[in-house]
Image (cartoon, rainbow, N blue to C red; front, top):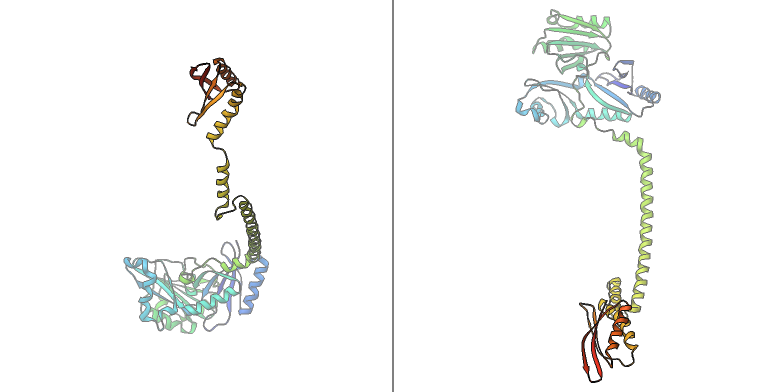
Length: 408
């Protein structure tokens, strides 16, 4: 798993970023701070050492730029909360509701926590970080960063870099200058009161100073203290601003940079193939025209008159007309065998010929001086593979007439 960057944006009156690198287990290390140029150098060095084209980043927004509220909702509205909640905020906003980016927590028993910030400002910050090669995978507000989501009414009050950070409920909190600690907490106490408090700071001196600044009403409550850096014990359950139009999308730009050369090479190959294919099609069309012209010229040699529409079909039709039919072929075969046999006898005369197409039979009426001639003929025809029989024999004086029926 690649190293992840935890990056906190500068507060309203600050100029330095704060960042640390988190390992695969989520432990922060290499805590650092600096301006934009120093951050850019640190990112470049990390990319080079880890051979990463982009760095997954958990972005921390300053609490002064975020506002949290708790709103009511009904179960009927649950499916349409993202569309309905901005209208509940409209009366309390100074500007237009379209100018804010709204993040919504998980609904619970008719209550829902929301947080919003300036949409244009957030878009500019994310675009700036993307240009540095950062891939924003989570976005949280600093005062909501540490405290786990619990059902009790314990307040977390933290001090880091002369800034007060308060979380007074699940996904509810704010940041303010440390000098305004008492005023901010007294205003909050006017609305609600905790059962206990948790004080947190990066050093014993900072913790002692924070204890002095809290109102007396809070000093009477049970309290716990923690001395930890700002980037320790982070809660993954914190409200994520990567919602709506800031939802994490597929890193198309990063993928394009990785595959750009290969895609361009493939595009050039496809273009060359298309050009070669077009040239080949043009050559084949030219050859086809030559073949058609040669075909028509050959067709004109056998069809000198008339219009040539379907040359191949017209030539095929003409050839079929020139071929002997089945009837003519059968007759010619019988005549070619039987007539030479008849002509062998000089005293035989052919009186009539008749061919029946349906039966394939040839009938020959003959006249001879002797009946034996007819018998000789039938025998000779049978030797040549034909069937022959004598029909209708008549005697007229010295001559004999008969009809031979011949078939295969």
